[in-house]
Image 1: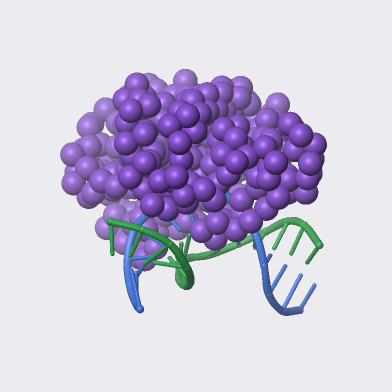
Image 2: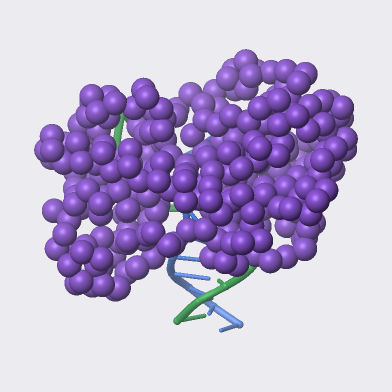
Length: 296
DNA sequence: CGGAGTGTTAGTCG
DNA sequence: CCGACTAACACTCC
């Protein structure tokens, strides 16, 4: 269930092993995964047919990312768009047996397994797409313009890891908003990349309560939120990256997260700063954890 | 066993 | 334009 740092760490890990690999064979065992995105999911035999035939013989030339989407770009100009949603995983098993993975926390399990829906056989190994809840998708587009024309990226906000993400930009975006902070941070049309974990972590690190209305935030509070987004997300990419590289070293089902979370999943546990028990509340239907004492 | 909850996000409705 | 809610689906935890 990856947020931006996990997706970026996965991209960086896979980039090392996938670039220059040639696609030999593709199998799809659940048509809707490659047929359509969104909530109305329809099997489309023609899309499956194109997906498993057009890319054959092509090389993977690069892996890029927009928000939580990974693009696998092919030598023929086409590309795969991957969104892992809640439980998607990509696992690459090299011919040497070494594994590179990321996304949903990996269980020790056979590959392929009952949640494997796509298998890409490459000249240097095999790439598996697994997805327990099947919300994610891997779509093939003949070129990047066709992807843009779908409007898939139209409502995405600024990339927090890019140099375009400036304090001025963040301030102008957030101060216009009337909603509560957590909801706005979760809203991918403002700043992309924060999901339920990083929203809570950023709010805690910034000393700001997640239920604050955005238009009541002071300039120093906005600056602090901005600084913490710029600090925490790249830090998490690094930490994710260190264990994405080789999953045999990862500590089982908990995966690579949790080591450095200060509030997520810690309701009732002592605050890392003041020791008082952390509180919890639903905001926009999402469990939110915070410290009543340390966050204002 | 039953119901709630899960790192996402599109779509719908008032 | 908003916010609230739902759906897509499988599994785990009380």
